[in-house]
Image 1: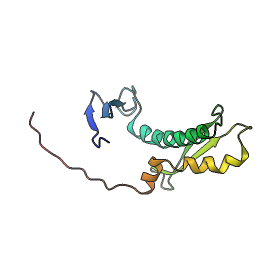
Image 2 (image 1 turned 180 degrees about the vertical axis):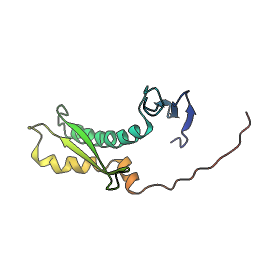
Image 3 (image 1 turned 180 degrees about the horizontal axis):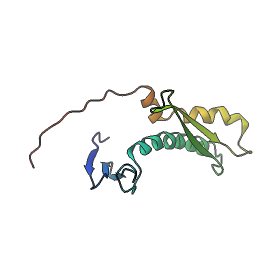
Image 4 (image 1 turned 90 degrees about the vertical axis):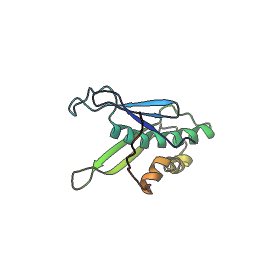
Length: 135
């Protein structure tokens, strides 16, 4: 696994990340001084939570041959009591009426396997350093 992500500046308030053969584009909103041409970095962070849970729910259903049509996850964010930042994230897995009752708790358990959530619950250590390079 490549453990380096290269962050570059794309003009204006655009900041891009190159990782695993992909370029992930970000921008700031017009209100934040950007063009609003791509999601803001924090939106990608939030999306990583729901999409990570989603792949586990999808795989759970796929492994049991349960159709995924009509299944969606609604991710809601609630502020901290201080009003600054997010204090609670709720993932609501919406299931169709014919979803097997015996799997409802298990599908929640599968969403909880999300690696992004696990890293938030047990965060890594962060270190920011500088280095001068020759051009």
